[in-house]
Image (tube, rainbow, N blue to C red; front, side, top):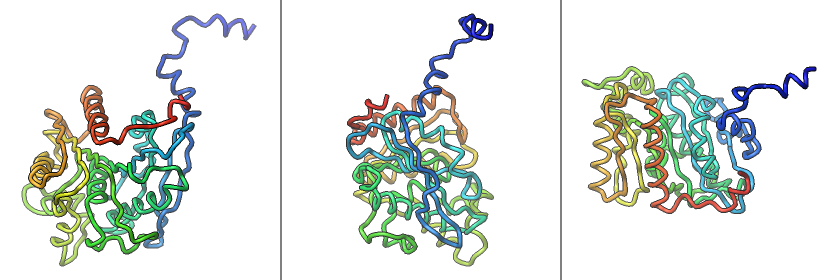
Length: 299
């Protein structure tokens, strides 16, 4: 009788296409969670590795940093943001870092640089393409993506990192409304409490703010950089994105600023989010980063 009742379910009881995809998508990916890439301040810095199954060659890889003003959030929160890259056949490395409750600036920047070194040093083991590593993040994570991809060892923030001494490089940076000028947020009209919390009370706070600001490191030869930013962002001024765009253009760095008209500090509307991801995909393709062989075997 129960079986007969189940077979008699009306049409509205069927799974939607999206629900049907979600019910079976797990077989397309494998996950290796909580891999320790660094121990600092008696704290284990961990990352999660997501990989599509069925790849026949090293995969282009997104290294992602979560937001939260450097004091809140964790790597488990933004998992669904990673789906567009996984569905393109990419591998994704989702990074945790020291927030201000564990250690003040520049700890988060140091950790993310070390995470990049870990990815490059372990690329062969995990079938990742070291020449197609893209760093990305939202808000404070956008700032960390920029610093991770723009700094050099000369900045003096890599000393905790394990592995080789080769300069870690990325193929592109995708910055979602990240901070580009930390000094601008600890004084004057754009002062933000989360930035003060991260810098702490120290006599060299202003020089440290400059040291961890992406604008400090604009120069020729940087990887392509794409920024997505809302015009009405109350937490990270839109003008910071404009300033970065202008500085990169003057330095001859391939870059694009995607403006979300009247947009807040995220999340954006579904239409604007889809537009942004479409532009990101085109940007990455233009720079030769999207080709994936064998990924369709997993679909």
